[in-house]
Image (cartoon, rainbow, N blue to C red; front, side):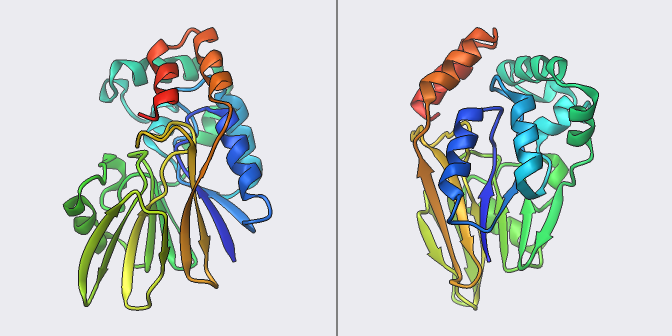
Length: 241
């Protein structure tokens, strides 16, 4: 089985479509690690496409904010403005769909979670080597796929020791090792690479590959500006930050 694992779409329909096109023929199913909404200009279209195409979806902090489950003062001013804008442009069905997304799911030998498997509703970022190492006791599967930081990377732990590799491209899954894989962001990368990121998990080949996909950044930026959202949210797309 081959899974396309996507995360942090952030209402960027151009990036989502580009990733789904790239995954077509490569993956047998698609799963989403949350933050479908927030920041970008097309939340409803992204929700509908994810609901249609994804076999499994977990909720992120932006889902909780828009659904009224997380106080907006948790966010910085740009994220708060986008959450308020998004909330006003979704109908009751969209908000209800966001509100009932689980925070954690298991899929074969993998745990799916937006932020961290340890206290997933605290929305902690796994950034440093120690951040990831501390999260291993919180899940029982061999793999854990996360997003939230918008920065791809992998943490590995086995009887041989442990390691952290930021910006991972591809890993081969070793039977004696457990992994946390950050799949990066579809709609708002923050690793100085503006291309959309997603991961391909091949269970038979025992391999995880993080792919990068170019998309129409200019169109996505123009829609953000036209919507009246903060200009910063448009400018950062071109810079991948």
